[in-house]
Length: 608
Image 1: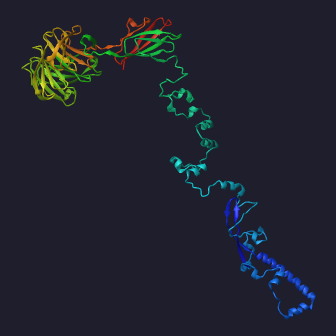
Image 2 (image 1 turned 180 degrees about the horizontal axis):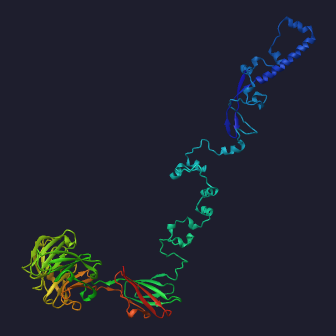
Image 3 (image 1 turned 135 degrees about the horizontal axis):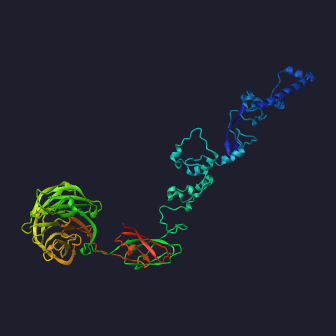
């Protein structure tokens, strides 16, 4: 029996599915054949009853089967059946279910086919409800591009580039489970939501390093930032203490209405007043920062003994000359008795009370007996010696700066006999091109020129000198200011230091007496050597009477002064010294009678 293939288009909620359906017409033809057989039987019965006419006809020949006869019988001619062979071979097992209907047009082949037309169902396909799931399918873009960030975002997902590498490599144990609470926390959209989930305040999500201390409270709004200056803080209880920077002026008022800590830069002479002593305020503090008004270093007339000294007899006797390193941390003294140079260290720069002999010395006896003076170049690698009995200056090299244990004789010297005899002191200019030698016998300071800097073997007399006999009858030493415009000469006979000015720097022939001198006999008679330190703030005198190097302050600079209110009382009735340039003094004040009288105490000084 023939079979025929039909194509039916089926719309499935917008989806198009094509199945090949082999429709067999045999079922209908079989039904027609059965009907025809039944009709033939009926016809045979009728023929038997009719008798001889039909029998006679049949006996004449075979029955004629034509289209009219078959059609009359309700059947089909073979020629009217398409795919006759498929129809003849029809079998009920070729269909999915017997319930698919009696018409081949209603049947679906088991092997599938191309369906055309709309397909409807009252049930489900593969267990899925197309009516419900179809709407979801409609949301999926046809041939959606999963590399398109817009599509991925619309789907509620993340692109690979948006996922942290650590998260990609995170592997949880197979038994790991996340609680409902944990899932909620993970799903929280922001910190505020997470705080709500955890039941925390805002400070819980603020980095601890953003605040000065953890004890400042649970709310970030009440914490203090570590890098703030406090200027924008409000509502802060400081325990009654607040800071007020006073404006420099000739008269400055200390107003105790709200403040009890004050700071003042003294850039001019200042008179202090007080006002508005608030109830309950019985103390306040004052920070004073000093400033220089005029500069005047190397002022020997302002010399003030500091009660700081060093006994040099512990090293040797007949100590004459001495010198400092540029930083004031090392001092060298020369002994005529021991024909040696000795080294000392100062733990506090320029402070004689902190000087200690190191035990290090260097003998110059091979070159000189009775050495009287020692001088170093600014680098501390060249040393020069002169003495009273040999009118020759000698030069040495230090392989380690300012360390005389590394000194060695350069085999270089200069004989001053033609001009200077009984030499007590020598020095060189800062550039090493000039040398000066003081002859005690002639009371004259002689000047020499060095054609090669710092090489005294290249020296020659410059025909320039300064005679100090009018002031100093027995001069032992001299010292220049760094600019070469002033020179000071010590005199053992008068126990004084004399000052001379030079109209041309480093040219002693232009020197003249400045009519300034300073008596030293109050501390030590017979001052032999004078040196200066710390940019002219200090003067050092070596005396013959007790072999001490004594330290004086010679800072003649002026600094802003302070005049305190009459209500201020200080110990022994003496107000604290005015702080010097950029030096800070701290003072505390207290009253026991509501501000009528204030008692002041300096709690710190010389802060820098």
